[in-house]
Amino acid sequence: MVKAIVGANWGDEGKGKITDMLAETSDVVIRFQGGANAGHTIINDYGRFALHILPSGTFYPHVTNIIGNGVALDIRKLVDELRSITSQGVPAPNLIVSERCQILMPYHVLQDAYEEERLAGKAFGSTKSGIAPFYSDKYAKIGIQVCDLFDEQRLKERLTAAVSMKNVLFEHLYHKPTLNVDDLFQELIALREEIRPYVGDAVGFVHQALKEGKTVLLEGQLGSMKDPDLGIFPMTTSSHTLAGFGCVGAAVPPTAVEDVICVTKAYSSSVGSHTEPFVSELLGEEGDELRRRGGDKGEFGATTGRPRRVGWFDTVATKYGCMVQGATQVALTCLDVLGYLDEIKVCTGYEIDGKVTDVFPVTPLLMKAKPVFTTLPGWKCDIRGCKDYESLPQQAKDYVDFLEAHIGAPITMVSSGPKRDEMTYRTPKI
Ligand code: GDP
Image (cartoon, rainbow, N blue to C red; front, side, top):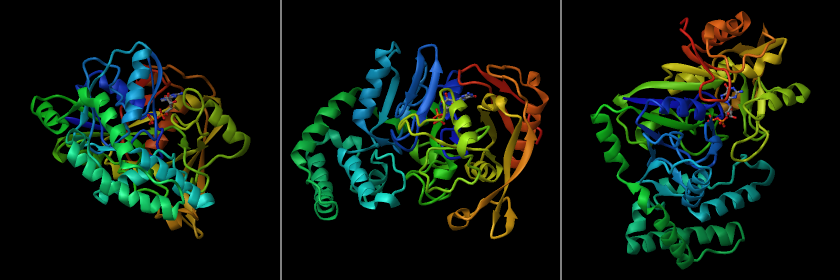
């Protein structure tokens, strides 16, 4: 059976912790989209890790971790990440890199940076890891698959075709140095040798695993709001962040996905640029305080180190986010963070052109939305590390009930700290 762990919001919801936790009783963990442009924080007996490209089952020897065909594979970053975790005492993970995966090339990273420079103030807040040019090339069919590395003549031809297009852009649009095919070819051959032991038939492997009744986790990156079709386009990422895309990016049959665990934080955070709509944003000193107290080390991007924007929980965005993911259950993380507040606001409606709605709108309307808040009492105590839901303060349980009723999806897990075992389980009321 397949369980997908995906984000309901703008990313950084705490999917890494939930995946790491559920991986303990699973056999396979698959990354199915995105690249090394976001991070998943995991805190376990080996230490604190921000994984960018390796799946979050990496710390368990019994788990096979797969980088699925839907991922943007930055080989250099993968190799560095493998080295970094093994140098911290973690045994080398069981890893399969799908031979169908496409390679994020050095020129994608360059193109991303050049494009941001060209757009200057109008940029989309890219992490400049080459993700948008990578996916553009994939759909323009000039991308290079991992399997191409093992057929040198084919590799040379495909590289020549791709570079001839890039060089027109680099020279005439960006006024930058052009690329040399032979240099790139040699670089790729060297990288090929580094990943050779991991490359395999991930599609066959996962189908066989499912036939044998194994449990497979799909690990999403970012969240619903960042999906290019159903999110806040164009301030999205360039790959699909929805559980539905897991069927393509991890090559599992749609009928095998039985559980979609949507992860959301007890408040909002977004690493996006300041031009992005973020209706329930908390600014000034109040925002600074939540940012300082958020997550396990404050709300700063796991990959970029950028301060994340923070805000109150947004039921309009989260209800929509859970709906488009097809959430069968919801994991609410970081409830412990809110213990310092006398009162907690929840954004339960958007006012757009004088009308209040709880339906998440398309981007032009979203840009005009103003938050409508409901205020709830805080619980004013430290619940960090709590493992028994019933023992939480009544105000904390009321807060969770309130969120559940408004997002319309069953909250089954409420996380009380960043560590693997800091978790409570709850019987949903809807
Ligand atoms: P992901 O990309 O969805 O995996 O999320 P990130 O790892 O980028 O961000 C989540 C942050 O919250 C990390 O710093 C986690 O260690 C932290 N975290 C996860 N769950 C909890 C929790 O219940 N309480 C606290 N305080 N921190 C948490």
